[in-house]
Length: 632
Image (cartoon, rainbow, N blue to C red):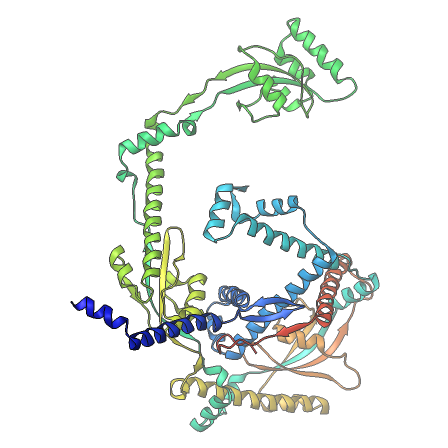
């Protein structure tokens, strides 16, 4: 009865109108989802070729990871400055543009690395080598781990080689004139003598004072010095491989593995032979045939090897070689040695790339299989490692599935796999817990995508048999810390600044006193001393700022040559250049200097090529809609 009434109501005019409105709304919503789908974001267009925003983001993440590894905690402080972050982004984008211009030039010139060059480059990559040799299993494993196909790696390597070809063509064509190199060499070995007066900053700090108002004014004038870096608050679950020992492995599993891998535990047949060798030459065949005739006539093999063999090293030992296995020596020699049937048999003449040989079989070790008792422990350890890896892989796959299926929480994944959800307070990139101190985790934790969506990350593989899933709970952008928080630091910096101003004033007074010839009195009144710098070279163990200033000063003339320089640590120094000695002839390093000049000129030529390509290119910079992704 109820369903009959429902069916009748559905046939009415009102119901049809309502149903039609619903269908229309769904249709429009569906069309709208296609019409309003966001367009692919572009960072720049270079001569019609697009550089995607995602390519920029990936390159920026890589550069950020590199700087983090290189600078450590200092980089975290630098990230607090939005201008510094924007500068990195601009620099990365310019590199991508330059790379695209170079690729376009390579296409114009039709430069292309050969397949053989690409193969050799891949095989020589240390990431794919084990014990100095290319390992195909490791190669495939790393490609799979990084979601790369062999074709993608091949194309990437080929492009790198193409770029290197162009770079070598430009840089390799540069040269330096001997006269230019000679002048540079003489300037490099120039010696300078000077008088130095150091004005310690601490002396001026003692006479300076800073009020709270002055400290706050300094704080407001230098907000970049008090930036707090961007921070995130995380939840995460860490998956470690379980511990499986050899004692946990079933005896039957060991026996089955041993039976299935007999070849791995078989020692192949080995032979010990002696040889007489004659180097190839016009009379080599005649000489080796004569030796063979003497052997057939009954002469002793060892004695003939000692007196007649051109292999003098083995000849001293009767021609004896070390134990050998099939396939380890020259094929012709190898085949002849293993064709001998009985101990004492002697071959005919055998020709190899090294010469002509006569071979004698001395001893044979038959092939033998190592007994199970001898290899049981190693098999158990191997199976334990494999089982631990298999267990981890299965748990890792399940963790990835659960983190994806329930993206707004880690609770279900942690409960099913018996993991603990760990949390952090607000932390900067360099302050993550030790287990998460990995560039892959850092890049993901501070990615725009993860912090905006507040969803679980993809599974992140760390060291062997260790993985993590993270979730950004909250994000705090870089900002200036409150004055109350940094009052002591601001006061100290303002004090140093004021002391520096007083030191600069004193340096100007000393320079004037030197010009007037009253420097001795000025130093005596302030209880300061001068120091002589004798025959200083550019390689002398001095403060780098001092050396740069000293060798930038003009040679003294009628007026003294003076300079004030800020030293490492904040002290101020005043220099008076007294003498300049330049060698009259170049040194023995002239050739090296000329090579260095050629390299520098090559780099200049390459930069000129880049600038020329940029000047002739049609480059369009595009700004992204998201504030976090904007770079101009």
